[in-house]
Image (cartoon, rainbow, N blue to C red; front, top):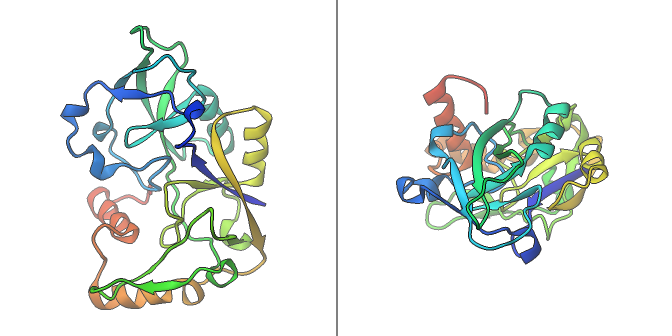
Length: 241
């Protein structure tokens, strides 16, 4: 089994209400906001470094920050046990409302694996056409679609995002083994949606051919995940995405 994990955004118990100290120094931060993960390398210098709490609220293990997320040491340790050195954890300093530093270590987490595993036909996903560009796109929603993933495409991965086939929002897929350990350790709070698996080989022709045809004629569409991947590859010259 596979699960799709998302930040809990609309329940007060899961939001501790932090504000970045230096938000005025990051005017472009909103343009690179990625929620729980971007799926690609993120320049640590583009991430604010400290924040203060506006209300006296309990601070959970994983929670939304303006534009991204924060995770504590327990979550980082769990990820590193399953996939050591694969993902980004950018340290941030957090203070409570009284101005005292929190005793736990906190990080902005960024999943660094982008690979398509969703089987379009089995998941009830439809390709639509954007007007006036004519660009094909999918409206894949974790709460609406019963996503079915290709077991061969997943392989031995434990945390990943889709490239072309990423549900709206900014969640990550995780393995059953990772989810079980997340639950066992009572790491909170993340919305968790079960996704089925099928022993079907994932192929571009069966799943993303419409957008590949469009890109072959028009090039990468600015702002699309494929465009972001190509840009990072060009800028960094590395496959750490």
